[in-house]
Image (cartoon, rainbow, N blue to C red; front, side, top):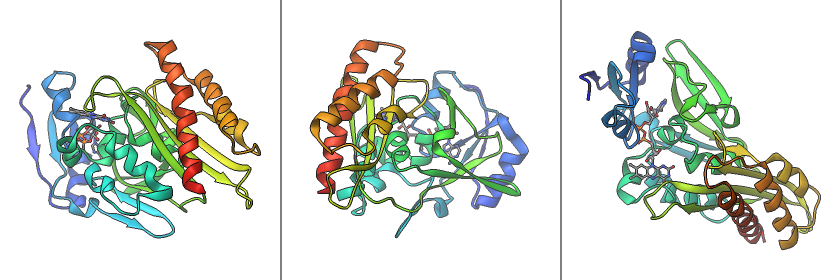
Length: 282
Ligand SMILES: Cc1cc2nc3c(=O)[nH]c(=O)nc-3n(C[C@H](O)[C@H](O)[C@H](O)COP(=O)(O)OP(=O)(O)OC[C@H]3O[C@@H](n4cnc5c(N)ncnc54)[C@H](O)[C@@H]3O)c2cc1C
């Protein structure tokens, strides 16, 4: 591994100053579960590492009519939050899909998003909730939708000196969701297909007033399956319509490898995610 400068800022301001100073030449370290692996493999060789772990102000969850999660929040903390059960269980399910307990204790939600792996588990669940990201740099901040954040595999909208500081869902929509995934071989392997689903029903609970569906690992970036969403709008909440939505979602997927198998998985897992979300709504 190439030698690098190492910094451990104690405040967010100090971290943003360092990022301003180094720009693209530095990488921030959160849990390190992606970054350290990539550095060991020689895929990236930063001139400086800025360890964020002293910035405990970025390790928080605030939940009322909205959800705000600090970017340094470990996935194990999200998985253990009692709010992420019932209709919001998709966030717990996505967090639990990542690696094993040891990985989830270190891995942060901000790192899972910023790394921009096509197979990351948190993005589909957060996309199904139309989450937004608050990005900060020295002297400025902006909010971007998660759906526009990823530009390609391991490539994002983040400018060199920006940090993700917060992930928000505001307001928490009516309805309920589910996250369903299929690992490659074992529980610690990367996800072969992940599906986040959110369903809103009409007052009688029979017709779909809104559906949100997001897929990972079947395209260069996690994305919303908007044709399948549009199909469900105004339809009866039935297993048959969930099956058709799954088939439409599979047509929207563009997997690079094992395409037929992954598309079949998209169909099956989408149907399953919609069915689970609907059961939770009842
Ligand atoms: C054995 C193993 C199994 C795994 N299994 C899965 C899995 O099943 N599903 C899955 O989704 N992932 C999996 N991962 C990947 C990994 O654990 C996650 O992507 C993790 O959430 C990354 O978070 P981190 O805090 O460790 O990020 P880091 O490794 O610290 O950082 C990752 C990248 O994001 C940048 N970054 C981190 N935080 C911020 C921030 N706040 N603002 C801007 N940039 C930031 C870093 O500079 C770096 O480029 C696995 C990893 C391992 C080692």
